[in-house]
Length: 293
Image (cartoon, rainbow, N blue to C red):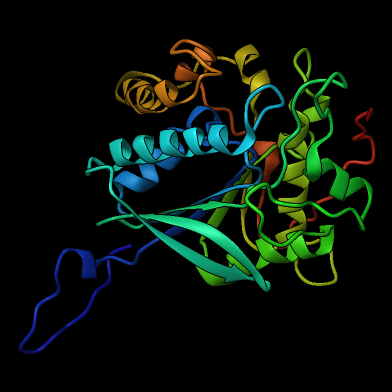
């Protein structure tokens, strides 16, 4: 939004002449943002917005060493956002405190891009050496469950995790936020990942007016895996750009290939009915259940 100002003896720079928009996107795993929320996030970055991306789990899997794999995925995200911003892949690590918790963040040098990593344990695999629920779901199912970040930072309960997310919002002061779908478990024929749904529910809880079920900050929910069953809607420049950004990520992640989830190169699904404007009621799903081991 252009500011109309009269200044005597001074002039506004291009950057000063515009009000800066801030966006915060909450995703379960490193790559969910690139696949399911791009090109929207990429457009924010290219517009010079203050862009925050919060990864609600470490994104680790049951059959690879946890921290090394999580760090590989982080390296992929760094490379992807450097490409998005068209700047060198140089970052500054900054520990920030939200709701009394120390949280790892990385800021892309020379830009307004910040990545936030919670390192909460992700769901992966079945009961044969894996965990089909993960800590996000376990916090939803049991308010006293302790989610212990795999990097050794202090544990969260459901209340303290939601409080941490709320604190991020209070600090960043976004104009709008993004999340996965809090009803993605109802998608057909392809149901969503447990972490995607649980993370979206916890994000929605952080985005409520205190003591109510009314939305505080506009929140847009995005469809994930079931997007492959939706019409193509990303074309031309943005489809090419989405692929270019993905090409920076996937070489760092041994669990994906270049054309894994290629259906997302030409799609980004943000249903109109899942956009929650301030004051709009959000009702948590009562049918979200995942069997444990």
